[in-house]
Image (cartoon, rainbow, N blue to C red; front, top):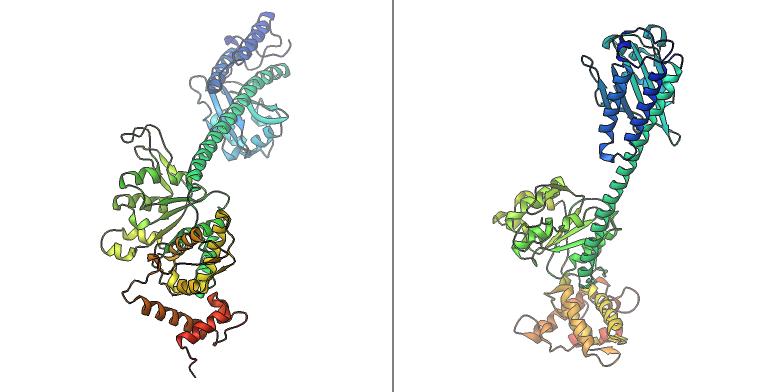
Length: 535
């Protein structure tokens, strides 16, 4: 075939190709192309690049080139060298992205144009400034780069270079090299598709494991009924709702402070449900309910064999909460030795599983709650000061029920409806004396105690009116003078309600509605207690 370059090594010194190639040389070339193509028929994906480099070496030696380079286009348009081979005395092209000063050359290949330079002084256009400088700096005489397409998309190029002589690039040679380049390209494309498949399978496994962990968590969590603590119209509680509404849209750490049973967990859930993380479940951890030896593995996970009985690797709650919210109830009970690890998660978003060394990164919003005065615990050396300040970004004081008595009727009816549905009992009203007792009681157990009281009364209920037995120990005041204490508390509460309403008993927002009793009942209680409006 006329114009093809010599195939024997003795021809490497020629300045130009022979006019004709012998039949033996053509046959040897065709056989080499067939052998190289066959090498890639079943090559494993992880060996593709190594096989390409071997094939380039064979091809370079056969054709007498000084260097051969194979590169792949990335999604950002850059051209990255995957493999390069060169004769002794010539540096291979460094692996990685080609430098930006070769932008004209890269753009030409990306457009699908063959780049063939026999003599840079004659073949390079004026705009190829970086390329001309590269030829001069490296001593490159002649260069050929052939782009190749897969599925109509330019995915890379194969290049050949001559540093010791000037080489011509006949069309028949370019056609054969293009065929071989496409063999390389198909192998790389197959490898990339396999990598995508493996990455997709790995991602599916991660999502599957996460889903299994969440399902297991939700199965346990579903056994615990949430408290109905967001019902209320008292100014104190409405102020709390306003605060959590403002902080919910941020990613800030929230610290809920308040007595046991005030509904801190319900508020934490409300913050999560109003946040951008609401599509994933909030993960809950009660730090006081876990044995000290298991807190670390529950929060941060464990590796197989981390301790006796750890028969399998287990993800911790922080891993499960990645992309969601984690609620740390009773955070003040967290062992002092684990507090630095929690601090690191808050600051850096990273940790290691118990018994492991691999650092795990998570994006979990933390909402913490405590009924302990953490500032006092810090002064006593029982809680780290730096951790306290990391948790205390947005503190919210949750008022006890005795400071939001206006909400007792509404909360009571919420629980009555809940138990009516579950027990199949229809309740139309709460006895007036029972409501008065509920309003007068100091509620040391807060909303949780109120719910328990209503549940017990619902179990005993036989008619449509709910009666709460005043003799039940739960409703006994905490001092010895039972009657006096109850009456004084009732008197004080009614006076407070009357004062807020200007002693208006009937109508919307009047004292009877505020107290959740009938106007006639309130009038009877006012008369019995001898209450008189002060002039």
